[in-house]
Length: 67
View 1 (cartoon, rainbow, N blue to C red):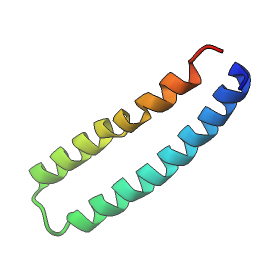
View 2: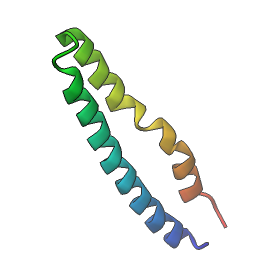
View 3: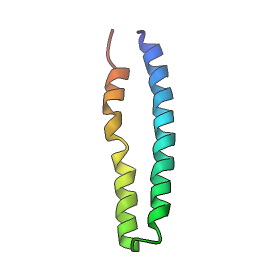
View 4: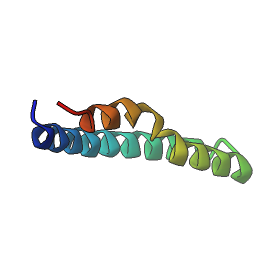
């Protein structure tokens, strides 16, 4: 597959993943608001804001792989 095609497809997958991840993380966060104290919510949002990148490492490696 050509590099340009791989990057375009990878960008589409990235945008789709980010949309789904953000909706799920926000939905889960809203469900936790009445249950957890403020400090626990802060930890949840901090972790959710960092963890999203780890599953994307293989995608980025695939997008930047040479012919």
